Length: 141
Image (tube, rainbow, N blue to C red):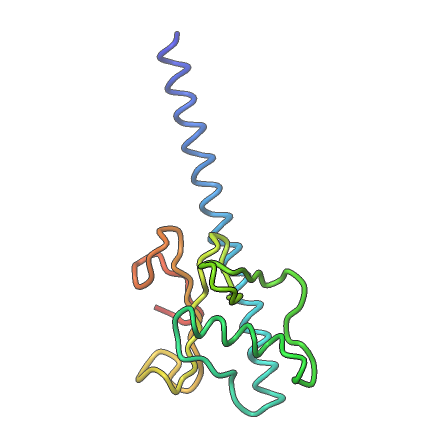
């Protein structure tokens, strides 16, 4: 009887873990879509995409640009998409559901495809490591 309960608990916990992972991935995709919309609106008004040299620094630069009072308007506000000081530096960066920086790179700072003339947004995904199979990005892999 105890072993049956143990097996059932294992199945339930496995299902809960899978559901949480699916929610987190879906949530991060939604965050990237919000950023895509804000960046595209910025590009329509300013004629170019926001500056950003990549990595966490690019994320901080993108956050400052999209929330700057010097703009015609703020492109993001409130808590969506989320931003946080993830490394204690005092700089806010745009973050995914796991509170990892969403890397932003303007097309001037990378060569070749994908999105040769646009920009890249990249979440480290569930494993927290950039450049791995589970990264969540705004281009087709």
